[in-house]
Length: 261
Image (cartoon, rainbow, N blue to C red; front, side):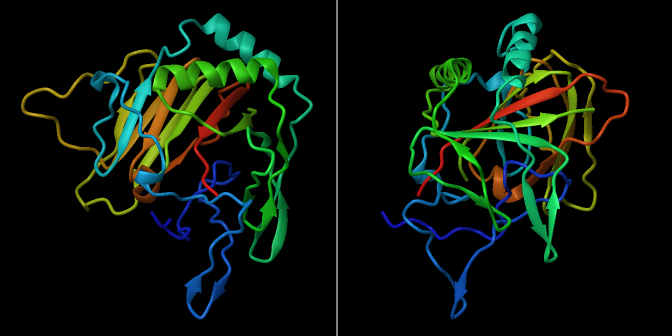
């Protein structure tokens, strides 16, 4: 089956700003050129990836045009989540990426570390190639295998983001709890954001009649929690983690993806 060309609206997994930084695309005669054999596309069709089907419906968020699950106690206990956070923080792979914005190179304040299972896989965001490592540290490999087993999905890429003071994406949070904001690209004028202050409670299964679907959602990512986004979520929704002065501890997010050449 032929693969769809990359979408200019695709959002990269890391960005120092709330606004997404779209990948730079080459155009010829008004058409987007297909990426090279060894470069992964940021946007893939649902038929090119394995969708998550093992999660219980009670973890699904009631969002319009989205397929999102939130599992607050995915790891099980905060001590394990903190231990993993502290060990990953010591990895030598962390670096501050540079992005091109309005013709200027900007060094992000946030550090990242990127890994891939295929030594030929490369990823480019905003004109800059990601510094990829192809040898997984033992802990990261264990975490990825655990996530794959529980979701029934194989991932070939993981990007770690360090927050200091169409395809399936699974993001695991380690360390300090942080606010997570999701907003629909085209919400109705009457839509209002929901707020969830709970760090451990999970969304209830849809009642009868089902609740109104949300076009904006704000909730807390607990230590050891997992967010899974798939389907049209990345095309219809934006997400961000705002800076919070009151948060003293650091947080590491592990984002697992199915990248397609």
